[in-house]
Every structure is written in structure tokens, then in C-alpha cells.
Length: 129
Image 1: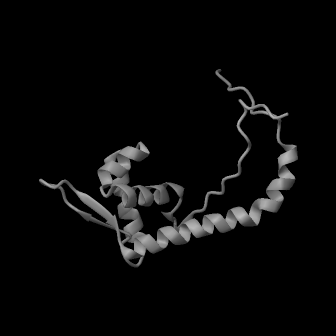
Image 2: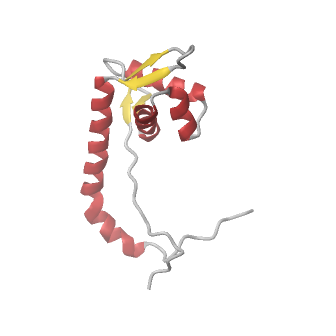
């Protein structure tokens, strides 16, 4: 009987789209795109993801530079506070990346099922040394 206190093993592919040496798109940038779409500001998206505003701003700049058209449109602050939104290209890229993730999970499922019996019953104890 499985131990309910022990989390079930999971497999999580990490796709990265490279443009030269630059990571144009990966899990962190996709999470940021999703948070921008949900919250409408770069500051709130960064806060929800536990990253600094400057880190989020740099990630957006990198993404916008790596694609033919910007993925995120921003408006400076002021009385209304700053705003950020995905462009139509940003929405398309986000959807395509998520489709790639789903396809990769589907493709690896048979091998994952073969690998599961090789895993330990529970995770090793944390090494506190």
C-alpha cells in the first residue's frame, strides 16, 4: 500500500528554445508570460512568481529581443500604475510552448511507465550536513 505521506513520483520535462546562446523561451519565461497574462502588470507577475521586478524586466527584454515581434507590451507607471500584456504573438507563443510541453509528456509516457519500478519507494532523507 502506498504511503500517503510520500509524494508520487512525477516526470517534468524542461523545454528550452535557444537562439544562439540565449534562452529565448523556457519554463521560467513561460511562467512569467502566464503571470503577466493573468495579472496585467509586470510588478504583480514578478511578485507572484517570487522574483524581483528587475529580473522579470530583464526576462521580458530578452524574450522580446529573441522573437521577430515582441511577446509583451508594457506601459510605464504613473497614476494608473504600469501595465503589461501579452501581444497576439505572445499569446500564440505561450500556447505553442504549452502544446510542446503536453506533446513531450505524451511522448515520454511509455518510457516513464517503464522507469517507475526502478525508483525507490520514498525519497531519500534530506542531507543536512
